[in-house]
Image 1 (cartoon, rainbow, N blue to C red):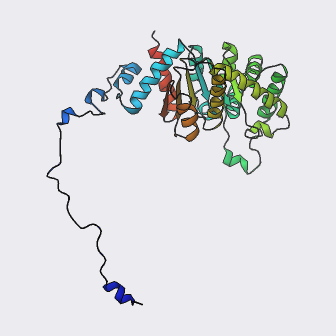
Image 2 (spheres, one colour; image 1 turned 90 degrees about the vertical axis):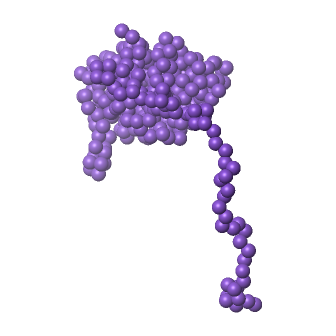
Image 3 (cartoon, rainbow, N blue to C red; image 1 turned 120 degrees about the vertical axis):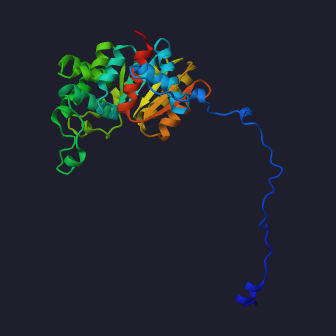
Length: 328
């Protein structure tokens, strides 16, 4: 056996030597002949005072998100007069104060149908009722009062139970309740506005995820039946989106999953969704919105976009651009 010293004394051949590469034969070409992805014609322009939203939009670079934002505006303006626009609204969108912006878009014809999750309808209901929503969870979880507001638990569950018994979906049930009660802040409510304008509003619930499920007034039968009824209403809306648009705003799981199943049913019936535009608006890019909203439903038939940023900035900007683009 060789000693450790004997092994160190043996020389191993080096597979590649230290040798500088010969650059003398490298080929080049004229810069102007290259196909470049960025050109000065596509650069941003300084904003001109007084030019308004139209001027701001025109000043954006025609690159990346700037180009996508323009394309989304164009697609939504076309869809308003064509295949329709369906909005998926997560709860965070409601509790960041965007109800009045969305209500205005509903009144202007930029909303053909709207979907939300269980938390979304809770925030909307509380806003309509008392003009306030969103608990400080850290402060109330310890004392055991989280989710225990009497009106939210009793009145909202009652509205759902009575509405579903009358053959309504969850969105219709809440909209009808608010229309009959006429609460002081109904003008900021999506559900109240949907009922008034007869725009389909559907609510898609996961049992156990929402504070009203903790109350004795909650009915699993009513929640399940109403949410399933709303799913079928939602499928009918999505199935009409030939040359239309779907926006997923602030829902990371529930609404992207519901949308994908709606697309699957429309395709199963052979209904055309060609020309579909999908948009995800959120402050993070996440797996399900990317795959189930942007990528899979539009593959080979349309276009999907991600507008990444805070809802309280992006949605008002989007709304302003739509209003300006719609003309006087």
